[in-house]
Structures are given as structure tokens and as C-alpha cells.
View 1 (spheres, helix red, strand yellow):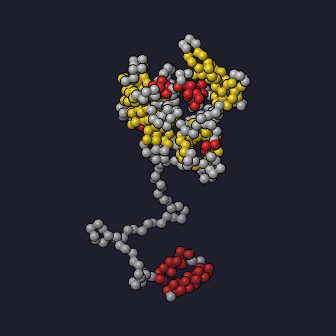
View 2 (cartoon, helix red, strand yellow; view 1 turned 135 degrees about the vertical axis):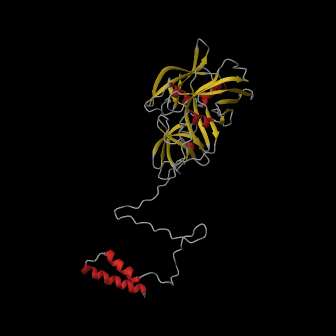
View 3 (tube, rainbow, N blue to C red; view 1 turned 120 degrees about the horizontal axis):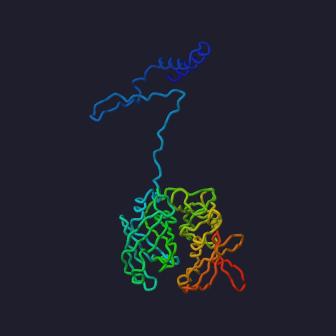
Length: 398
């Protein structure tokens, strides 16, 4: 009955407003005064605040409403993604990330053949399994960090692994460093930190001496979790770091066409769309940071992949061409037999691409015997020269 009476009074007051000019606020106040306080038999009552000592205190003051011209404010979300552990701010951050044991697998194997452990103070211990007799060789020294391309205000990007003692009688006192390397690539992939290193020193290093490796990949398990999200309905360039053909999943870290990183240093898992079989992609590595052009659908699934143009100007340097050629299984076999590469500045235009020509042969000191010729294109294709037909034929990648 009370609700009906209130509704009737409200209707009457609204009619009176048309004649009296009374404001809506005044009308509502009249209704409030007429209703009076809630009856004592109401089943719900406002709880009073209780002090920590158990005594009753006054109720908390009601919030003061803002004026009609102001919008209510809400607290901002203070959560932010964790900082990128591989975006090194300084030398100390780099040394912290290096601390621990890293494993190296030769290009033709998934089994580790070398392990290097860094201390927090910069010392290192490298253990290498000799591929000729499986003997374990040990090297100890200090990791000196320098700036190669990085500015003085940035974290170092070069490692000089000075050598102080070794059990390797083959090199003895002939080498004062096991290698000078630039940190060329880095990422977080499936719980592992991955470093792609480029040898800078002339002559041999331990990795080039035993594994013909100029671009060793080091991995260390950390269990760090990924923070980013995959890209959807986009076409972008990315470095491929891992492939699982069984689940049709590839781990990609988006990058510029020249290989430089974009955003966080982390490779995210991408599922292949139903119409794409990753095993049918062009003959080009799907691991160790090889560059691809990737297209995804609205769900973030990969619908197309092709080797990415290497270099922003479409031209390969001899250094870049050597890295690409070392991925070719046939060349890896020749290098293991003792052959070496020779650059003479030659180029060939094949398939409308400017290719770097590399000779492979044996070095006899004063003379170099050229036995094979290869051409490497910016898109990653490798061609082999056939002297009988005087033609460049596309190589079948492993």
C-alpha cells in the first residue's frame, strides 16, 4: 500500500510541477519528507562499524557526490608486464644474464658437444667434446665485455674470451683467446635463453677449429615465462628459433628485415593453420634465428611463410652470405673435411637477385685450390655452379 501511495503522490506532484514551476529536486524532497524514515520492522538494517577493541564506533562517512560536470574517477590498473630480462641496461645486467651453464650443439646434431659456464665475476670454464675421439677438453679464462657496434651508454655487445689455461695440447700456447664474438641475436624460447654469436676474430676459435662453426648458438634453460602475445591478421618478418613438426608449431620472434629485434626478446609459439604444413615450406632453416616473412590469420595461426629478404637494402654482405652458406648441409660436410671459404668480391644476378659468390676449396698456403662455387641470395636461396653446363642450379637444402 505504501508503494502505491507513493506512486500516486509522485504522479500528483509531477502534474503540479507543470503549474508551480517547482524543481524536480524539490519534488523529490517532498516525497522523502512525506515518507519519513524506514519503519522499525524492516528486515534489513545498516551495520555499524566495530572498532578493533570490540566497541561500537560511528558509521563511516558517506562519499560526497561529485558535481554533474565531473566524471567519476577510477583507480588505474597498476599491473605492468615484467621488464624484458634480455634488454640489458648495462654490463652488470649482461653479466647477470650470462651467469650459469650454456650448451652448444653442432650444426648437424641435436646433442650438446660443448658446455660453457660463467661466474658472476666474469670467469668462464669451457668443456668441449673432441669430435675425433670424444675426449673432453677444458679451457678456463675471463670473459671481457666490450662495445663493438653498441654505444658507450649501452650494454656491451662483444665478448672476448681470454684464455689462461687449457688441457688442449693441440693449441697449447698458440691461442690467447678461444674466440671474440659479437652478440648477434638473443631471445627467450620455450624456457631457454638463446644467444646467437658471430665470430669476429681472424684465424681460428675453439668452435671453428673443432666444429667449423663461425656462428655458434648457446642455450641456457631458465624457465622464464613468456609475456607477449602473438600477432594476428598481420604480415611481418620474424626469426624462427624452434620447430615442432608433430604439433605443427613454430616459435617466432618478430624482427626487422635486417634481423634487428622488435619489442621484447622472446619467441612466441605459433600454430600452423589447417591448410599449411610446415614440412612443405621452402628449404630454409626453421630454427637458430633464420629469418622468415610470416602471415597470420585472425586467430594468430600461420597461413603463409617464406624466407625473408636479408638486409634492408636487399644486398648481402660477405659475412652474412657466409652465415647463410654454413647452414647448407653439403657445405658443412666439406668444411668438416678441411675445406675453407674464399671471397673474391664476385657477384651473380640469379632469379633477379644479386647473389654473393663464394668459392670452397683447400688452402695450401701460397695457393688456394677452388673446388666448388656457391652463390647466396638475399632471400636465402643457395645455388651451386655446374662447370659442365655453365649454369647455376638451386641447391637442395637439408
